[in-house]
Picture (cartoon, rainbow, N blue to C red):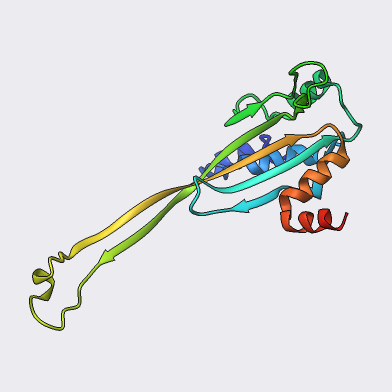
Length: 192
């Protein structure tokens, strides 16, 4: 039984406390690791953090079926099985599909399917103050500087957890390596 199922709910009710919230990241992590038919490249997500971005944290799971699956309809059906329960709605998703421009067109390709789940992590409060330490009385007014009260800027901290599905474990591994360490991948390409 995974931790996001209702195990132990009665004990929380008896104590009068709410169960600790389970993040969508935890749900995705546990759900993927419980699936023997899912290959997780790198064993876990590629994590990127940027406090100045809307998504303060990205967790990117790059997965594939353990048995290769190049039929687009089968791949999309497999992607659908990766979704969390219906009460946990994804923030965004895109189906696996073939993009066809015509026979022998180099732009023909397969778009891999993905699904994203979002978590609100909290609010960051940054304070800014504008003060003048006068060495000479009235210098701030003469220079047109006004001393303002501290300003507090609030920033939402959000996390996006993405599951990208690739048709083969080797392809998932290559994509994982490129995303997790692009400079090392560039060095390998230069040696070819």
